[in-house]
Amino acid sequence: MTIVSIWCRHKGDNIIGAGLGLPWKIPSDTRRFRNLTQGKIMVMGGRTYSGMPQKVLMGRKVIVLDNSNTIEVFDAENHIVCNDIANLADYPENLYVSGGAGVYSMFFNTPSIMPDVVVDCVYGGAISESAKDLIDVNKSVAILEQKYMPLPQRFMLDEVETTVWLKKGEFVDQAVVKEILNYLETEG
Ligand SMILES: NC(=O)c1ccc[n+]([C@@H]2O[C@H](COP(=O)([O-])OP(=O)(O)OC[C@H]3O[C@@H](n4cnc5c(N)ncnc54)[C@H](OP(=O)(O)O)[C@@H]3O)[C@@H](O)[C@H]2O)c1
Image (tube, rainbow, N blue to C red; front, side):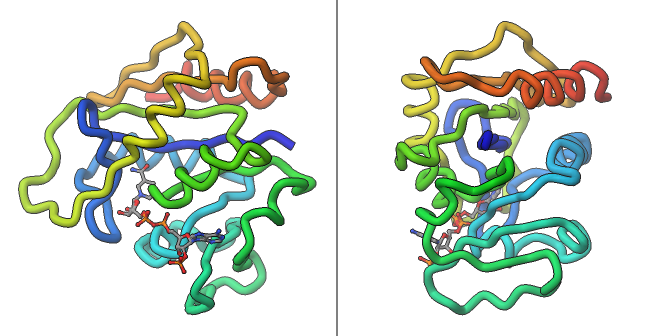
């Protein structure tokens, strides 16, 4: 099993969210996220799940992490709730960790499920002035910089620079990496 983590963070302060939403509108970034996770099993936190438009997740396989047992899935055929992240350690298929900050932190801090590959999108533009309740991934970025190595390729689109990082000292499935790089090379 390969675990891929994908996020878009703001340059400098590593902000990824405001309340339940995003503090920016970048259609090409939304498209990248959608295309890289298309046909994959996404893992996301209850807050991220609740804040996403239903039509974005309809028909996609999603594992929703929730401790509170308050989340009701809106696509019972494709979405399941998991309240013990340890159950994902031996998952039989690749997982695409899709946020938010609490979930990234759980994955980066749990050795058995640390992501193998990180798709690190960094937005250098301005954050919406009205954004409130900002959420950052500072602690996860510190682990990224310490325990991962960046591939040399850089992909720039609409003020978002994307770098793919691989976990140091681990065998990483090259087919997964190739698929991501192929997408990034041809997008835009
Ligand atoms: N820019 C990006 O790339 C991006 C991507 C995704 C999301 N976001 C943003 O991130 C923000 C949401 O992040 P967040 O940190 O507030 O919430 P979150 O990560 O979406 O949700 C955290 C969830 O994890 C659950 N949880 C905690 N420990 C657990 C465990 N051991 N096992 C199973 N579940 C567990 C929590 O349940 P309990 O509350 O019951 O403990 C909670 O539902 C939003 O602003 C969203 O827009 C940004």
